[in-house]
Figure 1 (cartoon, one colour):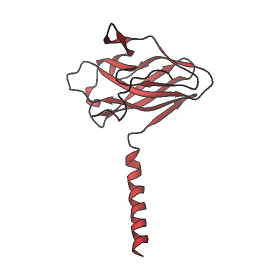
Figure 2 (cartoon, rainbow, N blue to C red):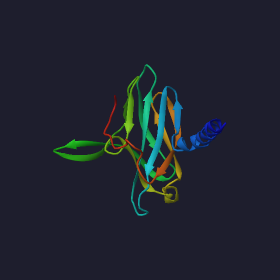
Figure 3 (cartoon, helix red, strand yellow):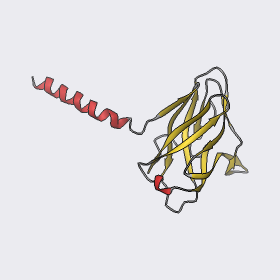
Length: 164
């Protein structure tokens, strides 16, 4: 009888904790594209810009392209990438990002990312808050995602990775 009670207690505890495990995992779908876990790292209040990251998976048989992004918390939003030039890592703006058919593109530190400039609403840039980011795709159209602001980057987010 004691073992059954412990099993029931363990299952109940697991059921209660399960939503907490997925609290930061959020995904969005538009057309054949899936955008997973948009996030941004909490920065000091005087930071002039903030970056947003996410993973785009194309489950379709045709390529798509991320043309631009926008957010109500910024006057300007740009697509950027990091590239190695003359033994130096450099950040540069890109006009668009190709999303290959059946492929994945990771927006992460030291890779593709969204730069938000001319920040308007810094109150949403603290740990636990979320802000809207609209992604404009060539074929799939627009999708607005919620970017979760976190003190620490998610595990594995430091990987430099472009289209696969």
